[in-house]
View 1 (spheres, helix red, strand yellow):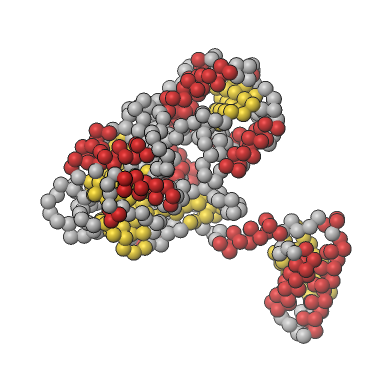
View 2 (cartoon, rainbow, N blue to C red):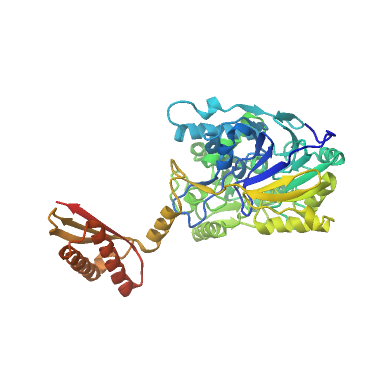
Length: 565
């Protein structure tokens, strides 16, 4: 139903962010009207530094599981990890149809294939059970009480879409991640005309990308980088050139390849995620690569260094990415060193500054020429583009999305400068239930949200207790106290003290001998008092903890082990 329906709706439209607010990543938002729920995006977040051993962070979708009978489908704005990265994990719990544009759907299907290989047990697979529909720009789909229209936008990945979500209460426009690029590398410019047409018909609320809301002006076009790459290749004619960028930035890769072709160089792509995305983009004809330009790493060995370009992952300092392995000398096929040039065609995502700096330092120590400045443009709208969308859409209510709290506040200030009163701006937290009528927008209640940690094939089996143990092990190590006690309560072996990550054993033999003596006296005292094994373990743990703290001011994990003989 569209917002042109003259009947007064009897229910409220609910907008429920299940993730993606107060953080960068894990974007997922539910829209609910009576017996219908649709979900916009289904992303992941990457683990923070204290999440030791964790691979991915995905959203808690308890609310969707509890209301599964209402769930009509997932509509996806674009193919970045923070918008599609958790979709396989989520649909394994709440199977529902998925709607997305061409490249986005291809990347989602790749996620399903990976999940089916790594996580699914024998039986139904996501690729077989999840209904999928590829949509085109301008197309609308009906999902229960909702109609969703896909609108062309520009971003740092091909086929990005904004959404016009029509409900009985009114139309909500969700921009997704976007920028206004009048000269995109691939495809057409953002459909500003459609935004204006929808705005004239009346828009209840605008959910707008806040990532660059603190930055004044306009985001430059992706095409502005072409002459910069040309100049860098000219300045480094005698070097083998590496370019590190985001795997998903197909337009960036295309420009790098075009410059390489212009300078008579061959190109190899390294990094699993980048290879997969470029292969998919080629298959869908989203990228046009000149003939005989792209080669394999093995074929590159026969080509002179000054005719080589290697486009690689690792621009964010990821420890296992290709560039990281090149920098620390563990890459199996590429040795990087003096005479090479590495171009970072990206800016560090907040939180990644230290690992990026670490890689730069490693490369500089090897004698590599590192180029880090002015080789990147953002895929997100700055302040003037955000103002443009507000002016075209003319929403009744402003709901900033996508970003940390400071980014949401920056967009709220933009809305205020455009004349929005305080009661027309709603800054939400993940889990808030925003209820909208044609005349009001009020937060009324919370739903369960949170982080689900993925560690290898384990999903959600690592919680705060396990993370604290890992942090403690990483900080101070572990001491294991082993002993053998008879059924009659006689100590016949040990206690032996073994440590890992605590002290260097060869230089601390006296300390460990004293620790063993403390453990033995504690055990003997407990046995004399007829204590049970649990009491003995607690006493050993306390005595050893006190001993270590007095001598070293450390708090290692202490694990007493008793074997019955």
